[in-house]
Structure formats: structure tokens, C-alpha cells
Length: 220
Image 1 (cartoon, rainbow, N blue to C red):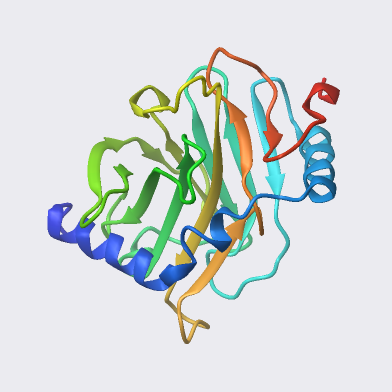
Image 2: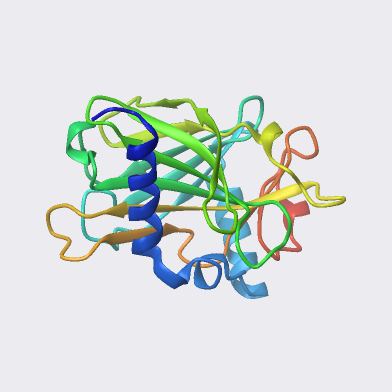
């Protein structure tokens, strides 16, 4: 259960072997205008405060990591909280369950970064990676906390990300992978189910909007 390079390499292999060739295509498909507008309205309606936004997800995936909501704290320290329909323990996720936050900072076909959250058997750990040809590069370990038995929170150091010229925002989506009971193959949940969510960089705007949306100005 050691938190070492071998364990991280095994976790990244599990993640991308399970996602297969979908990374860079369906996981980063952008929303069409109608869907984008609908998601904008949903995000506005679900926003709990000016400091964080909530994105709900239906009960649609087998396994313990079927997500019911992703909360993004985007003022001050950027953090994602992933809440599931089921309760689970740190030990039960060891080697069979991962949470991944993908981050697109340059408008490419695939996200340039991801934060991988995994269990060591005794604690949840997180690391920020940059995608690269050959082997992805681990940039930093990141803070992970659990405030309840049905979720996990991970801090994202946005200041470590390299943004494209004149980029004032980044896009994100969350994927969970679970290879435990009730999942013959790895069960994968993706939030949002299609497309990605655009979030302004810290200090540039308080209002999140989905990819392709032109109605962000309607947010309070």
C-alpha cells in the first residue's frame, strides 16, 4: 500500500486502459448550443453561492463511484468535491477505484492536465499530471480530504497550469472509475455526461459557464 511511484504508475495505467481510445474524443466533445444553454441554466439554478457551483448527475452507473454531484469551489482555493450515491471507505477503493479531474487549458483535442485521486488503502492521495507523449509527467502532489463517507475533495493548484495565449478560462470534466463489485468491466461515470464545463481562471470572473455557452452573462 506504499504511496510510491510504482503505485501511481499502476493507477494511471488503470485509468487510461479503462478509458481506452475515448480520451481525446468523446470525453472532450463540446456541447452543442442548445445543450450548452440548458447546462448554463442548470448551473445557475444549482449555484449555492458566489463561491462555488454544483453540477448534479443522475443515478446512471453501476458500482460505488456513481456520482450524484460535483461541487466546484472557485473563489480562493480551487477545489473539486465529488459526491456519490453510495457510501464507501478508503480501504474499499484501494486498487479498484479512482477519481480523475481533467483540465483543458489550450483548446486542444484532449485535456492537457488531469488530477488523479486514488486510495493507498489507508488514505486518499492526489497528484496533478501533465499529459505528454510517451509518459505523462507528474507535476505535484495535491491535497485530498474527505468530509463524508460518500465523497472526496481535491484541491487543484491552478497557478501550476500552463494556459494558452489570452486564455482567461479552462474547461473541466470529472470521471470516476470503479472495478469492484457489480462491475464486470470497469464502471465509468463522467460528469457532465457529454462536453465539458468552462470555468474562468481565478480572479478573472466569478461566473462559471459550460463550453460553448453564450449565456454566461445571465448568471447572477
